[in-house]
Image 1 (tube, rainbow, N blue to C red):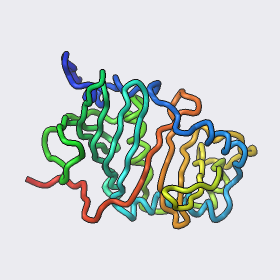
Image 2 (cartoon, rainbow, N blue to C red; image 1 turned 120 degrees about the vertical axis):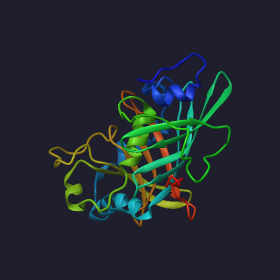
Image 3 (cartoon, one colour; image 1 turned 45 degrees about the vertical axis):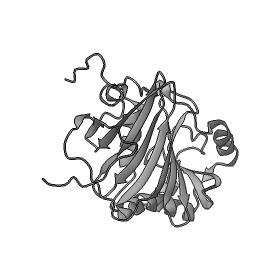
Image 4 (cartoon, rainbow, N blue to C red; image 1 turned 180 degrees about the vertical axis):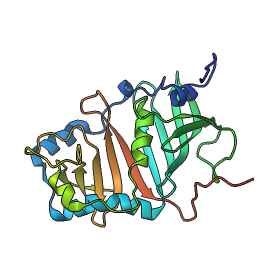
Length: 251
C-alpha cells in the first residue's frame, strides 16, 4: 500500500493515486472541427488504407525506440516528453505539471505492468535511464488518464503486421486527409472490436484516431477520454535520435 504524507509533490500523487490526472481533467484537442469532419467524410477503409493501418504497429516495433510527446489538459495540466521502446515494451521520459503557479517535475517510466516515478530538478529526461530512485505502482489503465495514455502507447507496437483483410471487415474508418508538419497523412479511426461490422459506420468518437503517412508510419494519435464527449489526448510521434536506448545500465 502506498502511503502519501502531507507535503508530497502533486506529481507523485498523480502517478501513484491519480489525484491530479483523473479522466475528468482533460479537454479536447481540436475536437469540434475533427468531429464534424469525421461525421461528414467517414468511410470504410480502402484496401490501401487497411494495409497502412495494419502495418503501423509493426513499423513502430521495427523502429525500436520512438520519441513521443503528449499533454493532458485541465486545471493542473501535465505534459510528457520522452520515448517508447516498442521492442522492449517500455517507456520513459520527463513529466511536468503546475500547481498553484508552481512547476512540479519528475521522471516517469512505464511497462505494461508498472508505472514508476522519481522527482527531478532537470528540464528533460536524462539518458541513460537512472537505475535507482524509482517509486513504482501497478499500471491500471482505468485508474487515471495518465495510466490510460501510457497503456495505449505501449499497445501501439507489435512484432508482426495485423491482417488488412480482417481490418476492412471491421468498423474501422477513414476520416479525412491531413498533414503533420507538412507530411501528408490519412486520419483513420481504429476498430471498436475485431468482429466484422454488422451495420454501416456511424460514430468514430469512441475509438483511437491515427495519423498515418503513406509508408505506414504513425505520426500522431488521439486517444479518447473516458466519459468525456469530444475530449482527446493528442500524442505526437517522431524518430528517436540515433543511439537512444531505454535499457537500464547494469551496475
